[in-house]
Structures are given as structure tokens and as C-alpha cells.
Length: 122
Image (cartoon, rainbow, N blue to C red):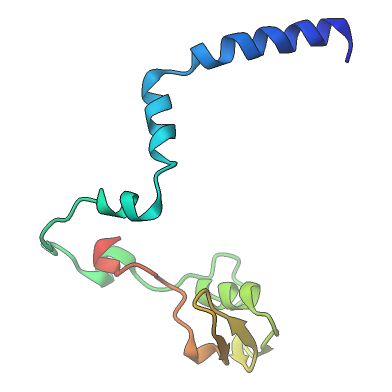
């Protein structure tokens, strides 16, 4: 390493630890909790769905690039392990996907890609 870079590196290593704000250090420390402890710290509250209306809040699928494939179909195509056949205006047939839950899914009809969290909670 060149002498100027060595000096710069030494200065940065000396200054950076003190330049981090205490709140940032605390937040970083909280990220190192074991999972069971982190989950235990999540707040629990009563369910409140006041004003929730799925149609108003989330609407339908969209086709931003106007190729006939809406968002759901685009995700299915991108995530397929074995690509499905695409016919007409983006009708999918066949294909194979591997889920996060360690299971194989054959065909697009066995998949919900729109949420892992209830929409009322999103």
C-alpha cells in the first residue's frame, strides 16, 4: 500500500468508531440478538381492521410494461425453476416452482405470490 493510503487508512480506522452516533451503535447491537429474544421483544396489540377494504387498499394486478403479463405472472415467470409455457395474452401452463417452505409446486395455480403477511396487516 502506498504511504499516503496507509496514513489515510490509519486515520479512518481511528476516527470512524467515534463518528458513529450512540443511537446507531445501540440499533446495531439490537440486530445481534438471538431470534427467540428478538421475537419476544415484538409488541403485541389487539387486532384493529377499522377502515380496511382490500379493494380500496390494494386493487388488482397491473401490467406496467403492457406485454399482457400482470405483476403476478411476471413474478411467476421470474421465479420459476422450470419455466411454464406462455400462450395468448400471458396464460401460463405447466412450470415448476420451489417454495420457501421446502416444497415443490407444479403449475401456477398452486401459488399465491401476493403476500406472506395478511393484507389487512400490510
